[in-house]
Image (cartoon, rainbow over all chains, first blue to last red; front, side):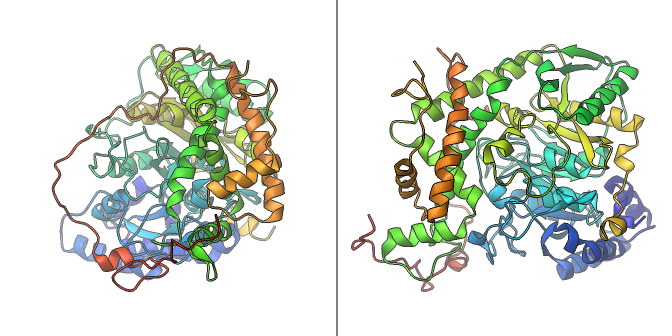
Length: 492
Length: 110
């Protein structure tokens, strides 16, 4: 097993104890990327030299006994939706190809201050719109477990990078499931924090009332460590909560006494793959064995979530993506007559199909005569969905469900049918509408070797409980220790 | 009567003209095949979101976002910002002082 397949929390101890150096670890990760990323497609940009220099500097500082940040020496991969002052940022779009942003995202600043080694930028669905990473302008990401299947999306590159041992930690963003679902498809842990828990400053906006930055790792303890670094107040994001960040790692080993887990019967009905259902039921049995109580809850408006989301998110996207005008930054076509043609041709040629589809949908929903019927109606339904969760969390601590209706799907299966792809977001989307946190943890495999995750949702700012509940399952199971055989798969 | 489709009792079918109108509003030049594909695909999605008609939202206040923070204010003081050269660094065309754009007043595309 290569060094970078150890969980980050373990690697940190090795670094601190002198059994490993950041440079050796960084070289090991870069070696794995060089050997296997051509077949997986996790990275859009590999910052090899900068990562080595940063690792060497951290090793030197450690040797000199200088104080170091909480992630000192650990390679971290960043979804290419976070702006970086020393690496290009493309959002996997031709629109931003070759763009070098003039500043760092808040979370990137935090990672640098924590002495993380920024190893590269990861692949994604263009502008984070999609559920398979097939909407990347630069090619898809495959799950390291099955190279004929997608990594999930939109943070597919970050999930695959952690799964494949390219980096022990990665950062993604989640607007409708874009951290949790690829974590599930790649067999790693992924957490979407409460809306406002992590600053969105420097996160390229897709749907601003839903977007949230969050961590990927190989286990729950490492996820907690990364969240501690990412979370916290930043005045540059007006929605960022001015709430203290708990030490998520501190009480991770303590089980939650009298844990009450809610399940919604509708989550286990039609459309759910049989093996996914069995996996979730087995995970619930693990919790029962630990003394948790499983209670049925009602989420009467859950059936509206996909429709609500696919009005709210595209509407906000159509507004956010109006900034790509071929003037301030991004692509401009070479030939045009007049300003409007310059706008329209630049946008028409540089955006991919799914981005255009969502801009169109949002523009339609916001256009004169339709605003009340679509956007306003969706916002009212959004409140009903959020209230369902408030009610549910009065009687349970977390809500358990599948992450996705099936394990990772074969490449190309969903690309021709946008509505079908949207419907597959059914289990993850509500958390974004309600603003609550959610985590996906490894819970098993399909008979043909595709990972299956368990989703736990928590109440607003309940990340600590969520992580502790996830750790309870992890201590009883070994799914998170499974590692894909890249040498075997690369030949198939 | 349906909230979502006030002028029809059944789901409104998106027409090719609707797609062209919206593409113009969104400043998106679409290919012929995109116009055709989007007409069908967006129509399907709009039909699907008609399910929201079943939600009783009488008297429900719209929820614009999940953050409870509102009216976040700060002192109106100058702070650090990008330098001019940083701000221009990603521009497709500039003259080191300004962004360069095509003439606006003589546009025939509208």
